[in-house]
Length: 219
Image 1 (cartoon, rainbow, N blue to C red):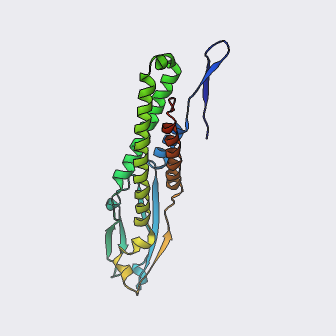
Image 2 (tube, rainbow, N blue to C red):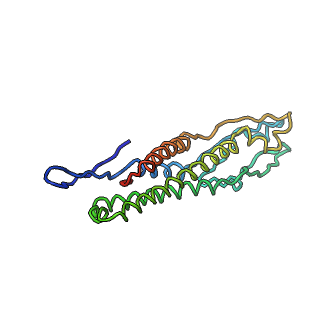
Image 3 (tube, rainbow, N blue to C red):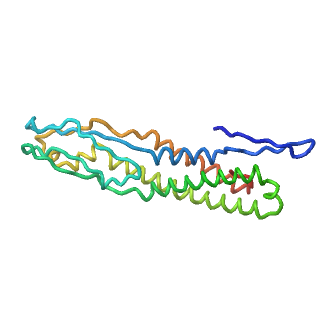
């Protein structure tokens, strides 16, 4: 965790340091970078009794915003050369887009707050309106982070299940025939998305402490 500080001389005996990039900013960038830019792939195999009809590497690509019901792939029907077009199940775009949207707005607010703290700090401290607005926005974002990250964590769990190669095989009619053999070739990689959920849990904890302490200089 890196926080850069900008220091100015407040008086002859002291100086004031202001955070340029806080954990909130870094977590927000990380959130919409990992989730908004995600793309994954899984592969399954269908080994038909008639070897000529087999396909041992069926690639299925999917990406943010995880409208899986629109993701199609072709699989052999193991009836001559006939193939069937299938779709994954589920639409998790609302949770994913909500999560990324909150992350973007949190990032933008952090940038605006940084500019205010650096260039308009005296006006910010002139009356209680600036700190009060800052505190209210902090409370709102804390609540929105809690809601969006919780919804995204649930959606991510469902996305993992819907793209599990073993679950995808259940969609293929040829795999229901015991004379054919189906298997998993490659599973999607979830390391980035798993980390994004963990980061948001850490950020929620930090924001809760900030609100409870009525911290006024949140960036």
